[in-house]
Length: 231
Image 1 (cartoon, rainbow, N blue to C red):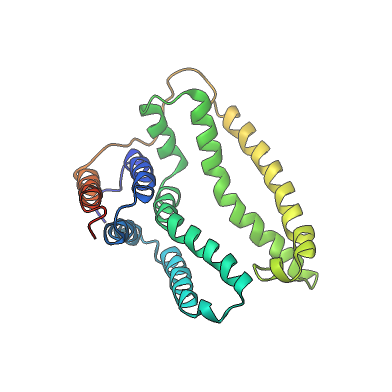
Image 2 (cartoon, rainbow, N blue to C red):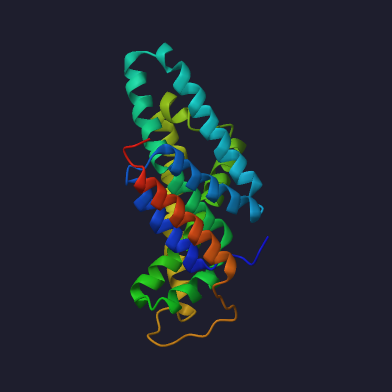
C-alpha cells in the first residue's frame, strides 16, 4: 500500500465519522464513507477482520427481512439492536482502522505533536494498549471453561444468563481490572507521566496519501450535507 496513514489522520477521520453519522446525511454518502474505511482496511491487509464484520452486517440484513416471523417482543428487541448497529457500524470501522493499524509508539508521537495534556495522553495510551487485552482475556477464560466442560457464547447469555455472568464475565472483569492497573504502572514506569518533551524511536509525518484520503472523506461528507433531505 502507499505510505501508511499518519495517526493524526486516523484520529481526524474518527472524529469526522462521528459528526457524519449523526448529521442525517443520505445513506448513499454514509455508506460511501463506510466503503472508504473498508478500502483502507483492505490496503492494510486486515481481510479477516473485515470479512467477519461484513458477515455480521449481512446476517443482520437477512434477519431484517425475516423479522416479521418473530413474536412481537422479539421484534421490538431486534429493532432496537439493529438500529443501534447500523448507527455505530461506520464508527466501528474507523475505530478498527485506528486500533488495528496503529502502534502504541506511533500514537504516542501523535499525541506529543498534538500537544495533548499529559493526563489525556496517558489515559489514551493506556486505553489503547488495554483494548487488545479484552479479546485475549475472553479467549483465555473461554478456553479454561471448555476444559471444565462448560461452553459459553452470545446465545448462552440469553438461555443461561446467571451461569454465563458467573463463569465468564465476573472472571473477565476481575482480570481486566488487574490488567488495567498493570498497564498504568508500566506506562508510568516508562516515563509517560513526565511533564517534559519525550523522544521516540519512531517518527510520523503527513504524506500525499493522507491528503488524498482526507480530501475524499471531506468531499463525500460535503456532498452528503448538500443533498441532505433531497435523496
